[in-house]
Amino acid sequence: MSTDLNTDLVTGHLAFDWITRFATDFATAQERLTELDRLAGDGDFGTNIASALRRATDKLPDREIASFATVFGATSRGFLATGGTSGPLFGMWLRDISRAGSPAGASATELAAGVAAGLATIQKLGGAKVGDNTMIDALAPATDALTETAERRSSLAAALGAAAVAARAGAESTADLVASRGRASYVGELARGVLDPGAVTIALFFESGAAAVGAFEGRPLEWLDAVVG
Image 1 (cartoon, helix red, strand yellow):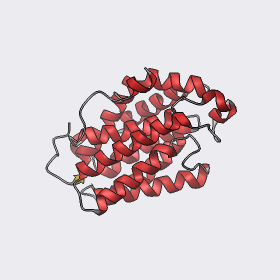
Image 2 (cartoon, helix red, strand yellow):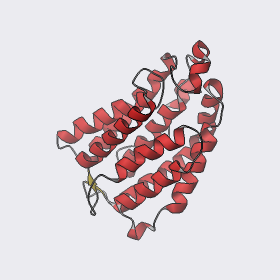
Image 3 (tube, one colour):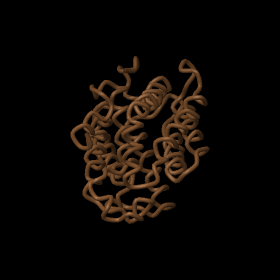
Image 4 (cartoon, helix red, strand yellow):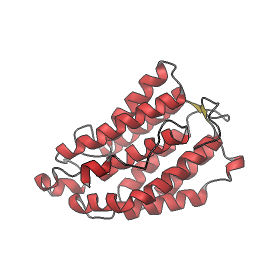
């Protein structure tokens, strides 16, 4: 949990805690996410994202001198240097997030604007929309929840908590979808009932952020136990 709980900004310290927690949480969930990708894709998702996160954390500035922009910028570069499809998409999304806020950090409203800008970027490039069984199925509702909660001038913790809940619901919805984009589209109906690993990773990202501000407790992706065992 971050030590910056009295601020309503994603400061450099909080951004650092968020990303390092995300990397740790992904490592815990990597095996399950890889298995999801084996069932619907080529099985390299977990390896690619783990590699991106290693590059990202290697590039992070020291926590004491970190800023919102430098943390998310370094994370973006780690993903952009990774192969596959998901790595660059995550990287471009994170790049837009890094451009939100000010030297002091990003408010919930500014964070939401950055998340929304990144969503628009990857939708423009990839063409995916809600219902295509991709990361967008978790990212779009998380973006809406984050924006709507921030616009009510709720706390940062409330906004990230709402985004995490919405992202989880979006990720869970992919079990009922047949992919029309990406490698999962090649197997069609055979992938029905399988959660999209990119959507699950988006849920984990917001879950890690909520945990960093004290708005979430529990094991990373604990809900997956009931969904995929």
